[in-house]
Length: 325
Figure 1: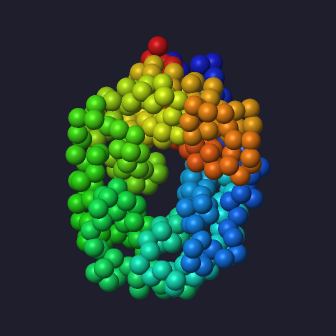
Figure 2: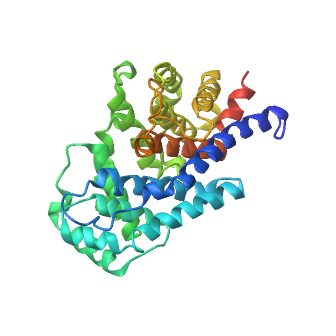
Figure 3: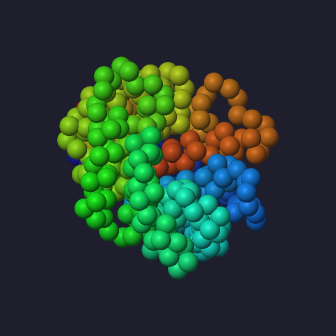
């Protein structure tokens, strides 16, 4: 198939519709991402306040920087700017680190903005001081989590040392992706860990060449099977993450199975008319707006993210799949 053929255009239109609808849903509900005024006070549930905002910033920032369609980049840029404004231009992170000096989540989320050149002097000073002691390097039980923390450290410092690279390699070697276990043993929790191993190694798809060849081959072989399993369960959130992974490996080979194209069509069909995508399709979306937001925001973000990566792969994932027919 040559570039610009009707099949290419149809495939691009499908993934762009997914991204456009998802960004529209998120934009219409941006007030749900607002941080409470007492975000740094003890007892505030950061998993329901700061974590959603951090996820919005991570994925909107990626979409804003790489999506080929200007109008989608513009909408994502607006959401990213909104997220930064919610942190009082970084002051929130300084408050959180003063309150919880050993917490890693403020550093991880601040790293999203630091990577984009948005800095707060007091937060920078606190991150520098708090990430230098040996206690920061105490091994964590979850190596995938450690990769995320190490990435945050790299983003805030703006360059990796040899010690950082050694730590990253050691943690990666203990992840599912580093060990490459029997693929039939992958359960839901392990699958989420696997997708994040890929995201951390590739910097959320920005540097796909960093993925080791052996790991890329393993993913090419087994992704279609895993996708079929979780799509049959209507696990749209996990399926979206796996589609993002598919775009992070060698695009032509990763998309060389019709299963990937079918997976995109099934995910697109699961997206509601308002652009929202529920995490699972086993129950109707909640009628309460707050509950509906919590049930949909992550999977909707993931849909926009995966669609963006599919459109920016060396050979866009869905296009390559259609070509293989």
